[in-house]
Image 1 (tube, rainbow, N blue to C red):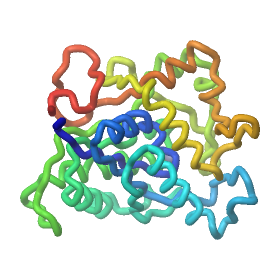
Image 2 (image 1 turned 120 degrees about the horizontal axis):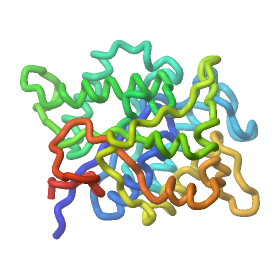
Image 3 (image 1 turned 180 degrees about the vertical axis):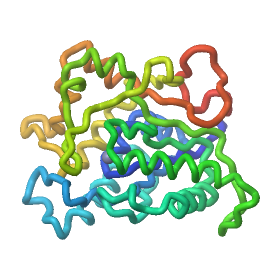
Image 4 (image 1 turned 60 degrees about the vertical axis):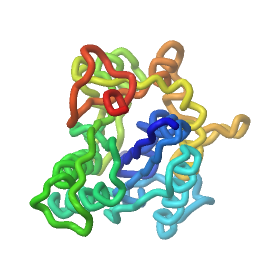
Length: 272
Ligand SMILES: [Zn+2]
């Protein structure tokens, strides 16, 4: 029998798991155990509700929790774990407390691989930056024998950051010119220098699962009434930009052994 591993993704908002959805979906299909932890329920004051028939301001957190549960089921992951932070205010949580909560979760679930946002937060979203920081700190604390928590110390093998290569963002107008309105600021995708990317996982295979999971986020996206698919700016990219985006998910190995001279294609490289 093949050896199985546990993956833990830690993200800020429902739908952020999509950034590693192909990878997580493929891991689950290969028999590995996959968990998604989400810092918030996606019900911040800035949150836009794509279809007012589906949620009100009051019900949005509950509705988006269910949407993430649906997405996790489509990915073959375990039901989502919510860390209980307020959408739009994650950066106001004390870092050390949040890191301990992640360390406790890591000790309990014992993942080989942890995935989270990069320190640039994708497009500089303060919630993403905060989740990246406290997950990175929690990753270190989990294995620290000096820290007493409910469960014994456990050090995962690797920590990965989700990443977009900067050359791609600069080449593709749909990304380069896109702005996200966060707390009154127009934020643009930052990406990471291409040479910082350590890992490109081919996920052509996981795309159906990834799109099925994204389709669960009914209150976040517009949907094409003909196909039932979410209308994402990425799904309408022209070729070859679309295949370049959807064909691979890219990561930066933040903690753990570098085992390859070139790009890795597998988050479990060196662990089997
Ligand atoms: Zn997010």
